[in-house]
Length: 410
Image (cartoon, rainbow, N blue to C red):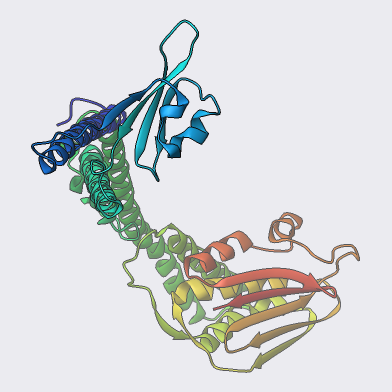
């Protein structure tokens, strides 16, 4: 359980990390200063011990330029300003001071020969300091990672729990995987509770959808089956030609109703757990759809041309494919309004192409699915598109040279 929000925890973690690094760097710099001070004093004592019992005089004072060492006379004649100067080649440190009212310069010369460390020793110290700085950098990085990881631990925990949920196969128990009590009342807790409630609603919706489709499938198909049986019994009796035409219309209407029910149940079924996915041949379903809709060509001078260029076998939902093909063939049969027209159906290895001639205007060279549906050229094109999307088939509908081209690709 966390007392503070995620934003405050991140801010606190950052502040703690910066404070700890500042303390560490402060101690490091203080230790470096003390080490340098001790090092200078130690070198002075070592230099004095080397000349024992005669104590070396490292510091000299000069009140005029002529008394300075030869190496410093040329520089002193330029009247340098008051301050401290270093001459590395001569290993001398010079302080310029004013000692009287005439503001004449005096020189204090500190000979550091034998006291300053050799260049090689300086390089070793530089490597040591670089190593210490690098170690502190690594320590700071590791400390920052540990502190920030603890700060965002609830987010990582929630992400791991959510990643184990498969959005393609949601169940009513998925929301129970997120134990919201572990995330407190901060932003992560609110997010966890929202996700759990959303999953609970989705799971309940999936259960209702499965119950509805199962009940609707039984309740809607039962009267269709009864009507089909009654029609078959009527066909066995002696009927007049007029009665046979009426019976034929009843049979087609019953078949259309059965197809429509199958279509809507197929669209309403959100998850079928792969029970309806299988490999099936395209040609038998296309031929069945043609025969089922052939009555729409009665009384029309239309040439129907079916070319089977391949015998494809595809994977998906056979009823969905049959419904899709039925809709497109029905559209082609119903909306070919010319007195003399031709409808062509091409079955290829990876596509089904249906073309029919239309009586359209010259400026309608490219019509979208929405505009075709609005103008009455199509029946259930939106449903066809949804069925194709559900089964990962590609569907397109366009006009070309006064012909309507409907294409399904898999």
